[in-house]
Length: 444
Image (cartoon, rainbow, N blue to C red; front, side):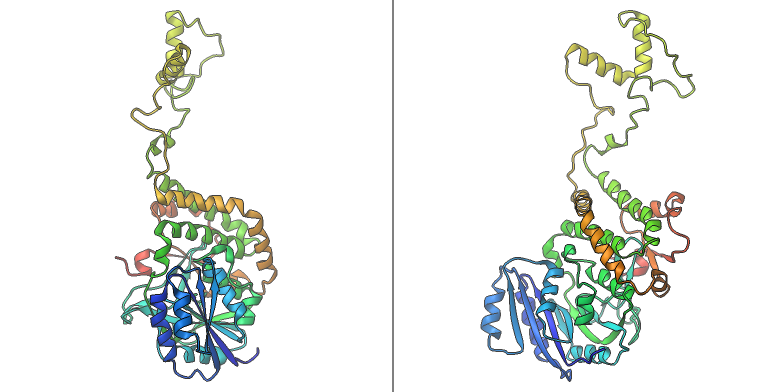
């Protein structure tokens, strides 16, 4: 592995000029990392005057380079562009809404330079703005491609922070140093993600490609959590989470294991969509079993024998009326009668019910994710083939180090994950840790 002679600090900024003022000032106060280094800032289609402010404030600073994009490329494509522009051996990815401690860059460089050659990246520690609670130390991945920050928002005194050099499944995309050659060889961030879970996906690809990721606790930054992501909107993020989680699972599970875990992944995605669908007006009509008395010959009691295949008596006779009333069921009988008379349509099968209408933003986000996935199956399959062609380490070896988690997160998850039907789809050979959100992070 080549030595680290130069490092580029890559900062992506979308309408975050106020954050850059603090972040760049903290970088100017960095202790000497003992390597040549520069700062690259991508103004990612901002409308808050970031580019003009950067030119005025830092136009003569030879260490800082401004790169501009007329549109928001997203976190993934934006950082890929910064890495491509960097003339460095390693790139430090840093969120613009952070304040790195004075020894941040030096700790990252020292950790990566002194690590074995198979270490592709080191991840730093992220704390809240007051420096009292943990933001990121270690990440956990669920069986379906989602992920969590262990002990997120817990006091540092009680949070489980990894030791120096301890292996991580993935590094946080807002505070890591990665060898540029390793990043590029692995394909960089998947630009179809736009944002979220791209660092989980990259970590899995680095590990399956035979490399490793370790922790550097001295490389600490303070973070204004969600300062930038809140600009996307809560429900837009829901779309990204669901879509990107599925892509992460689909692309990275090795052949043989993916086919066995896929039913549980699909069942979970379907269940969550169905539960959200229940929040929409008229959703009760979706629970109707049309063969439970709402169509012809299904209104009889369960104990009644099936009707013989005989010709019905004329409808104009009392016997014909009675047979049709009992056979069709009252609602179907009424619907047919009104149709023949040319009258208004029959009422919905459930009294007082209305036709389903999508109004819940969470439901819309779920369907948007499904729509995107179905429309991009071919591209995802091509990416999966490329990921698997680089595999040098099996998933079983990876999961021995980092077991997958089963965490009820969405409404309905507790009942789903506890059901025998769901558990039958989980491969017995796959190590899964069952836990709760409250055990993983600070709630409330």
